[in-house]
Length: 114
Image (tube, rainbow, N blue to C red; front, side):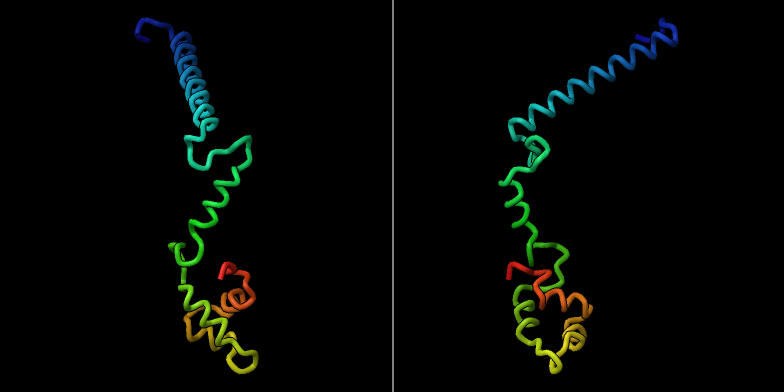
C-alpha cells in the first residue's frame, strides 16, 4: 500500500488513518459511557451515586483483601482498651500492629462502620 508512495505521502496517510481510528474509538467510548455500559462510568465527570454506594460497600472491613483484622477483633480491641490500665501499646503488641493503628481503631478513624 505504501510501497509506491513518497515518504511524505506515506506519513500523511498513516497519520490520517490513526486519527480516524482514534476518533472512532472516542465516539464508541462516549456512547458506552452514555449508556452506562462501562462500570463506574462518569456521568459528566461526576461519578453516579449508585457507583459511589456500591464501591464504598465493596471493600469495607473484612472484604478488603489487605485487611489486618476481622470485625470480631476490632470489637475486642475497643472493648479491651482501658486508659492507663490496658493501653494502646499493650494492644499493639498483642495484635502485632502499631500503636497508631490501634489509636485509629479506638477513635474510629478506621473501621468506622463497626
